[in-house]
Length: 269
Image 1 (tube, rainbow, N blue to C red):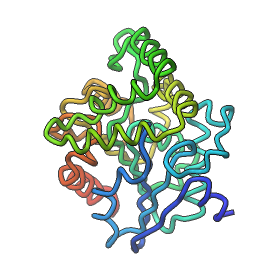
Image 2 (image 1 turned 180 degrees about the vertical axis):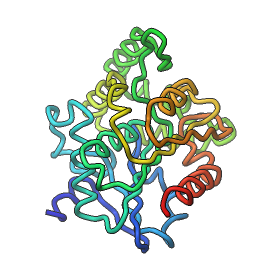
Image 3 (image 1 turned 120 degrees about the horizontal axis):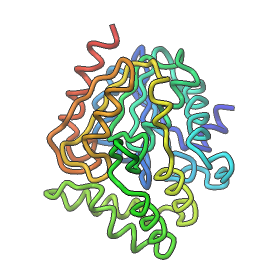
């Protein structure tokens, strides 16, 4: 079974330690986006990285529109990866959409996790009454329609804005290339699942200690989202990194690792 999971999700295991740190990437990305952060933990943890099905070097043939028509399908995959490759207590580090995948997994199997780290999380991207998700319903529909009409053009325009990091054009170009490498039909389906999902009602159900790691200026996940999560997520801490963009694990890896280290020092005792 582990070989099937390894091929499906392109699972990579490195490092050594009594606990396991599992890294899940965001929309349009793959596990290489963790290359600045994951190595920091390889001397202390067994580290597991993987590609979501439909992304990176995962098995594209395993992409099932019904299974992955919600984030629950990815959460089930994550639990299989943990069962097959993790040892000891598990810390899940998720970016963007993978934060909600991790959240759902902690609800399904809280005993499998010691902690969760949410990098740029959002339980809902759409504004709703007093809730500020950052986008109107019309904004999201326009985004998805533009993607449907011209995925490569959308990627070239949106990826640099999502990355932010104005002083790092290399990172902006890298994210653009990552977006453009994805299968357009799978990416468009995954985008609709990602940007129209609403997991606000699930947030209070997770009892696993959580670090909410946000940037001070994030186009995708504004500060109001992190504050909402902190108010409704039990055993959570909110840490704001002074940084522009949605990918602090790439543009501010040292600040990110320091915040994670501080959280884990107080959580894993």
